[in-house]
Length: 287
Image (cartoon, rainbow, N blue to C red; front, side, top):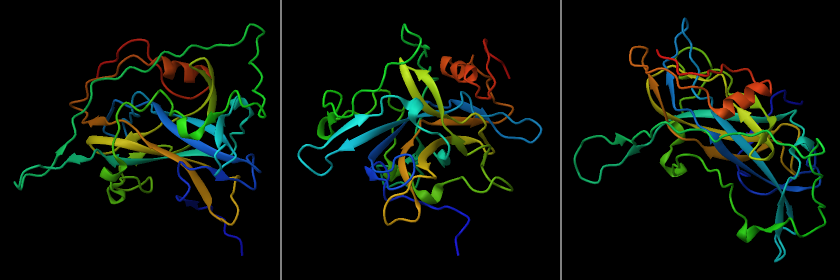
């Protein structure tokens, strides 16, 4: 009997995957996620006054086709036109974790201290671009070696998360994300579909989390994971998680201590122009 729910498996995270069904059928694909806009702060969730994280966290998905895998000629080429990627079933999931504490170096019984928060981080300016003809340049010839990069020297996206945490510092049993009811910590849409926008001079697949709110005070970070419900690999029933990344820290204030909101970032305004439902502000908003 077929099960109605799809499960995900973690054994393929950030690794090349051979797909035998879905939009990547017959290809070997590697995926990368990078947080391009982190939340800075939020106000403790209340039913009568619900405030999402601000600015809304956003991750970018980058996809690479792998050629000659496992040989000395192994290379990879990034997808040239992300408009060709179908977003139906392509989902990003977010989980909430408390910021890891710094272990003590002495033998005292004082508990570890939370890692310090960073000052407000400004999002990069986003400029809509197009070619003089009004369209986008055609994708590179997949048979050409000029646009391929040897895997051994391939560079990660230059726009890295604002803060890095060693995943080994983050214990799975500290995860705060559970069902969205009762005494849970995170509220809002924890699964979102991709949006294709103009970003840093070319088309990009991004996942904006515009509706997340946290129900407890403290310092937290988000973990993002990407998967495609309709792309499967040989010999595996479960849907493979293709990539993950951890975002930068943010602070959740009490209503009394909440300092107010900064003007919306350029990236938030850009997303709003593309139809993503979120609130934008031209000026600072006090509490």
